[in-house]
Image (cartoon, rainbow over all chains, first blue to last red; front, side, top):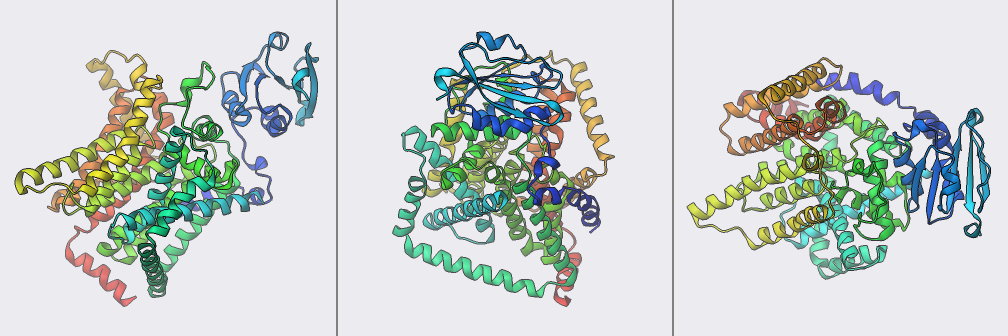
Length: 141
Length: 474
């Protein structure tokens, strides 16, 4: 009986603090965030809709994302596309990937369309961040 | 809308899993009661998951018609048994609903809290976005890879320095269950897929109710069922979105069911209950690597029972038991062979171990003990779980009830194996403790509640009589 009471006292607040209002409003993103940067998280679904369904994708991210959750996150949502992750913008000019996605933070340098690629979409995120999606010109149709 | 659709898909999946599981036990001629019914969704879900695996091997597309079709044919052939089974189930459901009217206010209140907690969990599972590390990196990712290729094939994943962190060696059953939900609707639904943990929770509650109600009475059983559902250790699995061990609760439920059937097994290694204990232990080994030692422990126990019977009573195990054992063991062995052939090895096998000196082991044991001691001071249920094991151990020692000793022994052996895994890990022990300790506790906590309930049966008869009298008055 004591264990039951203890369970009630501990579990009750945990359950009642679980952002149900946000969840029921259909804005769970406001309640629960993944363990990675906002620019990647906020524009992932639009990126998935923008890049071709197959082929390699070079994803350019901030260096702080390289050793974290970003690789797993992006390989999950972009599957079956093969993801190459890099923090080096120069990789955009040497890659043979079908698409290039650049998660550009507000203070990060700009990236113009590399030779052979065309800008397919530009997604603006909060805080001045941008996500640029480039697609190989022969794959863009 | 997304929540509603995911909820409907989840409901459909659990219903079909129950139907397939119920069909299997009916056709196999098992005696069906509450405990078997509690296991039916997992039997069905496991069977359909393995069915998809086989389809991949023989190049049958993962279409819903091919998934459900064979079961419809079996149901048509065994329609008399199926109709009888449905009548039995309807009658059992009617009795269960009818008995709710007889609950005393306290029991009814606790039962209401239990249902409310289940409702909160369901809402969380369906509405929280998919953000958990292991879900994204491992379990759901594997499900996507399998679904995309229509086969259990991880060999073509691109090489990446971090690929080892996906734990490709982990068995495929959980991801294949996720795939089953997607095959049923013909597309990927992340929210429905990540919510299948609810099916395991429902089975766990059913198993505890069916196991304990006849021996403890309704009030105490409902109290323990509430603890099983709502104890803080469960929150990592059903409330917190960053939870990093996605299949641990599935493994916990499979271990719980195996122990529940083992407790009921009057002729260890030879009867229906032993068969089902073996089935769930095999499913555990096909869910996570921690299930493999559990299966080995169960094999030793059941094998001892078979050997004893053959030597002393010249009694051989039945063909049904042997056939079932082989049928569920093949996928377990097949996965181990597949993983080894493709070089998907556990850290324990691939990483360099430190030199095991007495000093290193003592230091690690001290670190582990200290870590769990600090957990005891936290505002959660670790002290209660420790107390539950101590009470269960004391009552088991006082009792001479062989089957309780058996369940206690298997449970404690699994706990020792997990402790040894922590002690002998090639990784940094502090890292392992910080990332894995709560998951290992989660794997054992439901079975500990069951063990406590079974052990309470050994309380002096007067107390049990009081429980019954209390119920009679209520």
